[in-house]
Length: 154
Image (cartoon, rainbow, N blue to C red; front, side, top):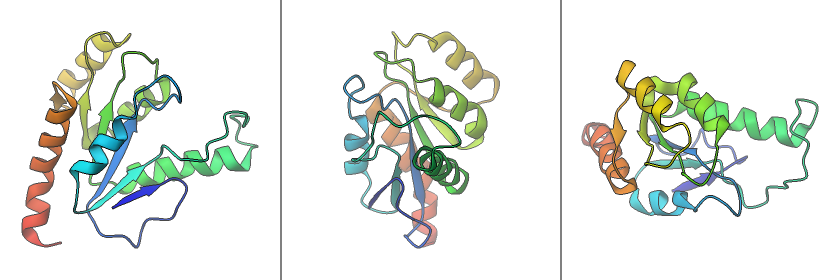
């Protein structure tokens, strides 16, 4: 099941799988679609909302923007796993920030060509954050991490 921001999600079945990564509309591929299709169980929390308005001022004073960011932070705090994808055609500075905040529950896919791949690789190595070679590998690793969750019948 997929829940998109800013819809409430706490009442949906666990595990919670948060999709963290490149979203830049019109630039980044919609990698989230592929990941959502891969998970039949659990709840995929997707910050890529259908009605995003790029004219919104990105300020704490803007209630729409603030609600979006607060939804994303709560979703990552409650997530059982955070899947991170850095699209090489984007900068994705917020994804870098979120990797730092939630590294303890991340699996990272950072392909060649991403402008800060070296930084991401060093952070992942230092803090023992699992990395994936492809999006398919990211999905595979996430399934492995959540397999125990499904076997326990939580």
